Amino acid sequence: MTALLEVSRASKQYRGLAAVDDVSFTVEAGRVHGLIGPNGAGKTTLFNLISGLVPLDEGNILFEGRDIAPLPIHARAGLGIARTFQNIRIFEDMTVLETVAAGAHARLSAPFWHCLLGLPRSRAEERRVAAEALEALEFVGLADRAQTRAGDLAYGEQRRLEIARGLASRPRLLLLDEPAAGMNPHETADLACLLRRVCERGVTLLLVEHDMGFIMTLCCRLTVLNFGRRIACGTPQEVRTNPAVIEAYLGTKAAARLAARAGREEGWQ
Amino acid sequence: MPIWLDDFLWTYQTLIHSLGINGLLALSMYVVLAVGQLSLGQAAFMGLGAYTGALLSLHTGLPFALVLAGSAVVPVLAAAAVGLPTLRLTGVYLAIATIGLGEVLRVIYVNAEITGGALGLGGIPGRSATWIILLLLAGALGGVWLVGRSRFGRAMEAMRGDQTAAAVIGVNVPAYHLGALLASAALAGVAGALSAHSSTFISPDDYAFEAAVTILSFAILGGIGSPLGPVVGALVLTLLPELLRPLHDFRGVFNGLIIVLVVLFLPRGILPWPMTRLRKPL
Image 1: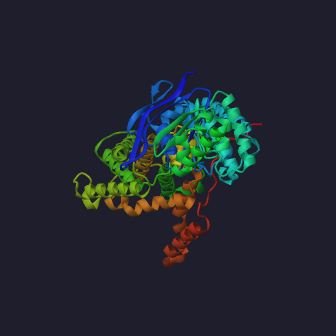
Image 2: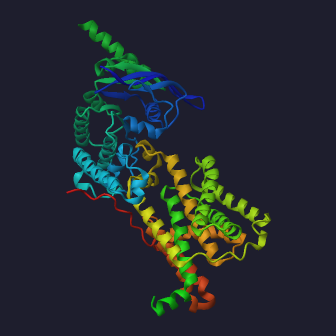
Image 3: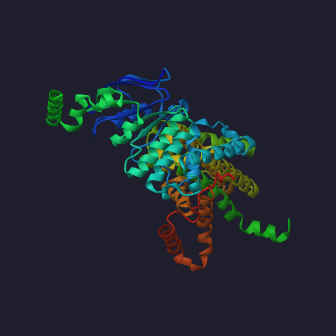
């Protein structure tokens, strides 16, 4: 297994508050990797560091072996990194089809002069983009809403639109920030199914999520953050039984009680 | 040319020139608004173009095409000088920085000898033929329209919708901001030169804050869904005072009232419809 993304000793401070503190982890190609932790653990900050929305204070981030920390935000899309946002960020006034076509921006190459003069090359590229965008919409199940204004979509549809927009750039790595937030169990199950199909297409997924059932069924590796630090890393099974993780989620008292009960159970056996 | 058309053009020449020039200024405003920025430097760029064009015509024997090119280049250089350090500014902050540019230039025009001081420059040859103005307006509108319909226009619309999301999908936001400001300066500069060679007289006050607000109002009235909106806005705001002439002293009141009504009841302008780029392939 090769490492697609390698975050090493990444740190980010906000006025002395260590939002991300010396965090290292590796995302292997072709996997679904989960990033979990209580509120304020630094998960979204870590996403913002990887996608370049905020600059890294220390450490580095390697994508396919290349240090991407100094690159501006827009250059990362061209390398094959796409993301969605915790608070949906779509282009409300665009049609659904246009939104997905916009997602392909980094792949398009028609030169400015061709567009200014309306030359055939730019028009051919636009036709190709329209077809590809529609295909991405079919993939996420929004093809029948192609001409709808993006802002008029239902909440769950907007989440799927964001995924389609991310896929339009044909990314190697897709960062998903709480994709199941606000969804009912039925929608969450559909989403898990969709994400599995995305993964089968060869896209590596890194996702932040609070829905533990969702995380445990989907991810093959987890990284756990608390107060900006990495406290655990491993398979869902390993993480679930890790005392530090239980303590972070449930507090010291509950962790002690659980440990005591586990001890008693062992004693009975 | 039939005599009636000749008569018509002769009678309304000034008005037709203003229509074309204001149309170009409206496009110059649109280009900046299209990337989600607010610049109030259009009048300043127009003034730079006007003074550059007037001085070139008065002191050199350059053909009009080169005079116009020079009138585009000088404002572009000024826009680059203002734009590069202020790229990080958005919203009202960029607006204030560009108002500053206009004021600085006005003070220079008033005090410099070569620009004729507060009295301005007169005796500029009337080289702006009607066909040149209308051809340039058509060309600019066509160019802005085609770019707007392309992937570049889609990127601009994305930036207008959500700048962060646009950057994440690979739009080089600062480059678009600068590019739009430069294009806008070029358009305003050409419009300024055309207006100087149409009115044959220019003075520093023509390019002050009031002019900047008038240009902004073209875009607000017309709407910025497509480049056609601001041009129609300019058309209406240029024709309206003429059409309201019978109202004599109440002209200004009605002019203002119409603008207020449009802003209240058509907040997205007279032509709010966005450009359609992609149709669903069958």
